[in-house]
Image 1 (spheres, rainbow, N blue to C red):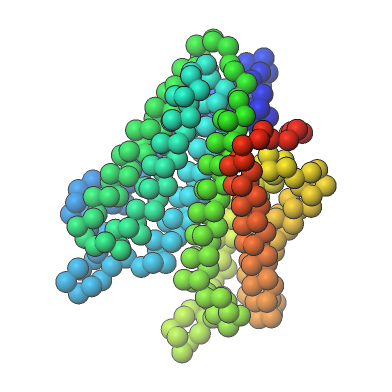
Image 2: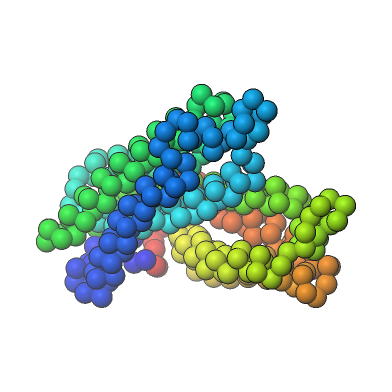
Length: 317
């Protein structure tokens, strides 16, 4: 991630080719977004209404659990892609005003698009157009950022080292996405298990009285497997940016190690609960709250640091 602060990408051929490959895959990701949206929601008012409101006359609608799950995945994916893309945009030769405007508008449209599901459920069937509006606004600005960045990388024009204002905005964007991501974690955990030990046991071990089936190994592993990578990437990005908030080396190492450890035990505890003892529900609850509160504290630290007027302290990235 040294290209957050270094403008020497083209001098480092390995890094330059890695960035080019990222740009290619991010474009494919952008194209696939249209296919994903169409397959899930469609591009008409009727198809959007039928997704969110299965039968409006009977009051049937998509569950909050499904909405929070989609929000959870979307915030992580879009946040990480934008973090990389914006860091590269910051190094281009375009004007500072243009770059800041694109970062702000794209971030706002992304958050509007991701949270539009909740708005549609809150307002009603007549607001289903908000989902496709947010999607199109976000995709247009995303493509513009991508085109300007890719053109600058291939044009041969000299890159510019990012200014402190650009770095602050980058950290601000990441901290906002991080806060939304943590909010989605709370929603997911609550809708699936509640915030009690018994709810955790019921979710994994089942409860015939509540018509809850025991989690199978396959069902558990579908969640466990991707979270091993996703949570490690998130913890790494969060810890990596802590120096921008003025955190010294020793505290950064401690916080980073704690984030990794708590996220790992949060994932592992479900397996231990299923096959060793129901008492590991306490480990699940502790590791979840520990990770959430620690990540929340780090995110707020980055948020406040990005809003300060003074420049960042010396960086050792």
